[in-house]
Length: 322
Image 1 (cartoon, helix red, strand yellow):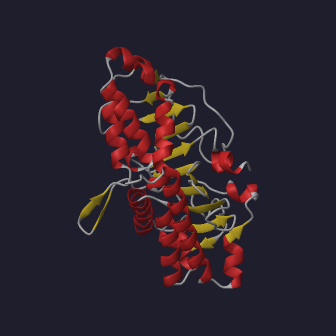
Image 2 (image 1 turned 90 degrees about the horizontal axis):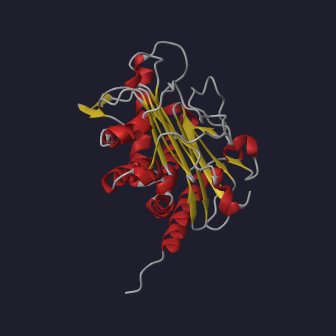
């Protein structure tokens, strides 16, 4: 049996996503299509994302609450086609958390499922570059697809509340990230931990919205100083962000990050006792991940921001050259 090449699988995933996008666009009227699709070189639209509520930072594209039910379902099918199954479930749980926030708020910013926006930068295509943007409060998915290339950076995932109950079930959209991070920091030897735990206190993301092109001086413990079990935990931690995109695109991305694991740093700020609120960062040649609990609104464990970047390939510039 001849094995199927990874790039062929990625190209097929892009084609599937493009078909889902075309089906969605076909359901829109002319005005809606014009509002949904931007030129691929529209730099302003690329950067029009934030963790803040949409009433504070205006998004462009189509508001989910303005779509007919069948259009809304079609839009979500595009998101599902671009992302992995687990990635889509995580995103859906983040959106549902915002609905919970809406139910518990009285006045103030607009929250909820209706307040998320979908747009395309570039016309969806199986071969030409284009980007899906889906986001709102505490969410900004920026997925660039170009044939057999799928790039998810920069993407912001966050949650408030970070734990809630739906139909008798407790939902924690970012539980796995937290559990792996504490397992990793507490697997460190005293010497390793003395390097990983840095003195600075972080109250939010250093490379969050509006910080494209900025950089951080690497800190913490290097991957080259970790033992095999610790390195495995570090890869599993990175996969919680890299694995949000469809599996065909996530696999080569993780392989790329693993190839630089010796030069990847893990830094921690705050207590290391599981259940505590702590900032952490993973930083390598092709990846930056930040995780930052927020003190605003009570329990910092119940309000989380995180960012996933690739300083060498933001918005898929490497494969597209644009």
